[in-house]
Image: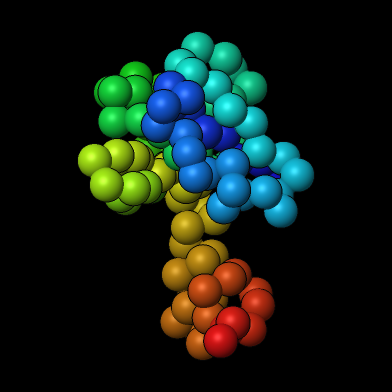
Length: 103
């Protein structure tokens, strides 16, 4: 699964560490590359939320998360992927769609 991180370099760390096991992660400083906007999951700087909200429309669910002290970011997840995740949680599959709970 592609994950796009759209934030200035100063707002990306420690995402490269957290996402290191995922082979399809891309990093962009601005939301001006169409490839970045095709990912099912995007992590973005708050400075880019207005552009991303307009570009992504209703096809994505967004939430805000603290990456580290003083760095708040937006997480965008394709609506279908988000609904499958929630259905998996409701079934008791844990925190992964279609997978057992990791404890």
